[in-house]
Image (tube, rainbow, N blue to C red; front, side, top):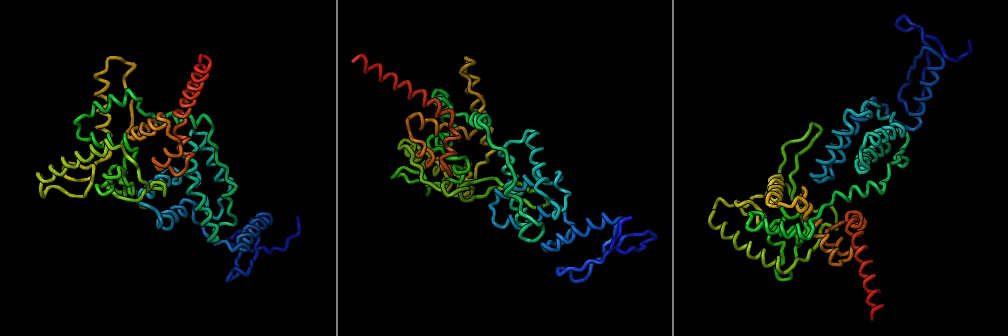
Length: 399
């Protein structure tokens, strides 16, 4: 048997190897026990490592630590809509996940990387992984800064890169109306209660939340522009206990670029003037029943429109167009309200507008977002440009 410096002690009728550990970061000595010399060596080494780095001795799990960090620390500086989104990440990807029961002091790069790789193999998107890491990485850094773990390893985490195929898949989800479909849509919404909401979306490219938050003071009728400075969204209050019922909130745009002045066609300005006059007439008829929020688009009682109701009515319009169309090839495929914004951008590109201008009008934070979103449109523009060049050379030869 190998010699050892450790003494033996009997505890609860069983013999153990024993060591009394002293360290500058311990207020009192700590007694350690193990059945073998090797086990006691490993135990001493692990505890000394924690003590040398002044790691807090805790049995708290990663899930519990993440939950407390998210709801008590990270939430302090977030908008309600972001809180709602992050609560969903916690509920779907952290709570009861393979990481949940690992002690925060024992969490490693390998634990995180293995979990991410598993998510990729099960079909989760690159954007999904980026969103999860957007929370896990700062949580790990917070643990490191508070002496809960020895090393901040977040810089070594490898996230999957977007392939050309995934980029094309993302672009394929953008479904603007063709010019013919747009004409038929505009014809179908004539005298519809939400006609001006749809017309304004098609002629300004504003997001639905920006349109629902729009007030009459945001429209400059003389200089023909809309001042985009806020957005409306139905958001639920969230906590570590879950989420409550949704309610409408008004908040600033997500990015600095979201605050913008969008020039609109004079024809739209004129339509909005007529629409405002009719709204004032309705307001005078309803008297005290009207809740004046100075909203451009609202219910007949002046309240905020419900996005779910808008979606249903939008789909109903598409269905009615298709019901009246005998030619199967001309039927409009399912669309989202957001495709009105894509239609606006597509028309601008077709008219020869530069990507930088489109980016500014749409309020994209970076031009790469614009270029990535409208890849298919820009590709078709290249073909048209080549065709024009070909026509030019032919005309030069015939002169």
